[in-house]
Picture 1 (cartoon, rainbow, N blue to C red):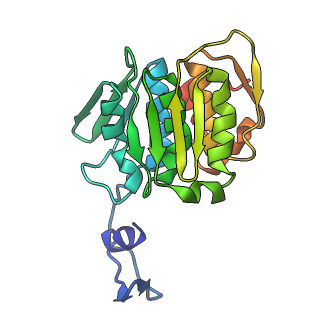
Picture 2 (picture 1 turned 30 degrees about the vertical axis):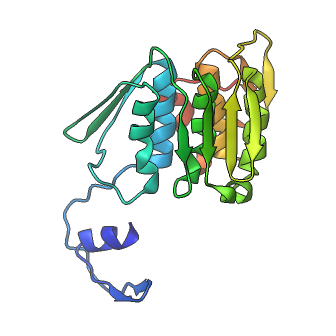
Length: 223
């Protein structure tokens, strides 16, 4: 993506093997640039819309270099209404969500929020293929399982993901969740809260690492 941005701006690259260099003292010749959205953050907004309303993501590319761009296909499999037209991706609230099995080897950042959707879905789900999740900002497999306990689902942590079984059991009791300084876990908790599960999210400012306006954009009060 860096190489594409540099060349779109009209600059030159020196490439060799799997490395590249940007020569100094170049001038940008492009008068305007369109940068595609961060797909991990876009997915968090889309997931919020899938359970709580609707959203339209602008400048959404037909093809993306980001592996996380698989998320519209995943949402469609889960039963979420998706429309794509002229660079606009519209996501609407689903009448119900279906469980899915997804390999996340190349898109591990989708895991916490997707796991939250799976916990809200009918049927079993399995997210797998991403052992690197334990080395993210937190041990995302373990911490996501902790978060999802509030749904009453049967959770089976795997060495490379999580299996979600059982039946959703919404509680009226308010719980407290500490995202362990992990922005993706805070967003996942927000999706559950938007779906009607009472959660107080501690340290909500952790989302500032990737999406400072997430709570406002998603219409979620983390308190």
